[in-house]
Length: 403
Image 1 (spheres, one colour):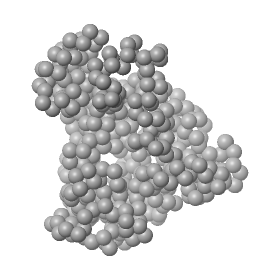
Image 2: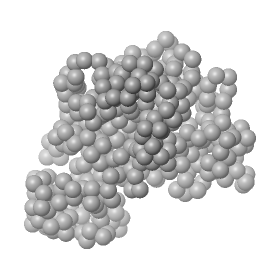
Image 3: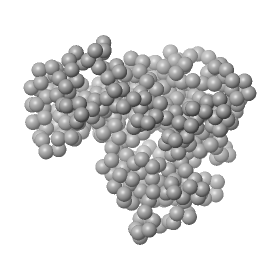
Image 4: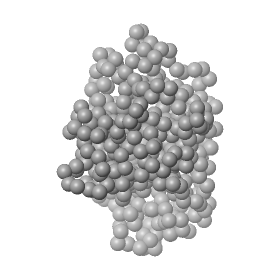
């Protein structure tokens, strides 16, 4: 019966089927890129909030801001064969931090990364048989440039011909398109607002970086890129990018057997298989990329955000109270703990949340090895105990969680 429930990846077709519904006209604004600073005068509130986000600070110049370096260089470590003075950029600050050095006209990642959670050094190296592009690059970590493999998502307007960027980090034009025309003559018609696009093209703006996939044209001029070269907000992303494929029942580097993401940067791969996507819920219905005081740039604290649509008094909420629905006290468990479990690896045992919004029952773990939120939290309990407990709940369908 569990195999019958492994339907998620089939919905990947929905991403492709919905794409033809996108706007027929070219939604690209005219003109070139001008950089986020040009947006500040008219959009000061959004700019100031964005400037504090990780979107605006995922890449930091380590020589201008040495305080951005989190790794412990004071204690000798055999993994660390470089000094802070060798670091051009640092990447990341929440889960891990990697260190870029410049050689010629490109950047390379040193083979050691800092585990922010555990405050320890770990090797950084992409193994054979993992990411699709590994077989196309030398085994030497310092022969794998960040331009084709990383910088397209960590910058705004990376030009593959010149290897130059308008700005490092996810600037305003990464999501709103080139702003030269809008700066000269501000109006709604010459800048992209993802929320004003049709739902597919609007969400594509986020999917350009929050998915694992491969370019439609590969290699491009003999180079293998790991980001959708040529895509701009308002375009149809599927014309440039195809998501990593998966066969139901197989565990791969990118997917669990049911199609849920297995690693980080799979938020979009998960999301386009979800009922949320199919029903028209967009990324910005939950997140504010301009910045917020909540974790993950959420519009509201987690529980309050979920209950906006799924509260007991809403048409699509549970028919009973949240306590009766979850069988947990709300202070101890939040909606995302069951419906967005942390099962997608980013570094060591640090995981990020899935975005399928499906509950994974203990029976799925027993049959397919997919982590489930019950025993992930209740580590001292057996799968059979957890399954029996759920089956005893009067408001839970045995057809969805049992075998």
